[in-house]
Length: 87
Image 1 (cartoon, rainbow, N blue to C red):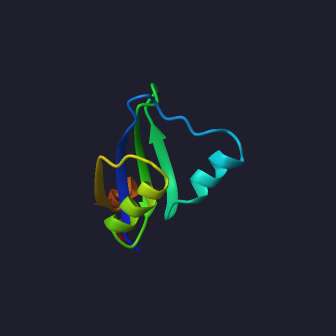
Image 2: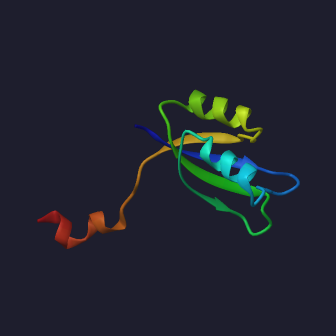
């Protein structure tokens, strides 16, 4: 399945409630791999496994989450370039 990085901007900061409602928001995504959030909680970069960018947009719309940009990505393993991997 393709992997995507989703860039989001939250003008008022990201605020996921620490309760059952917040847990439901986190479970309602396609396949959430992990996320990074800026110190001020206004920008996030989320990694998802999903069949298409449109599937991510639909899920974000259902959860009232912004989507600034979706980029298909793949893992770049720094150990790929070591001598151990060349043999």
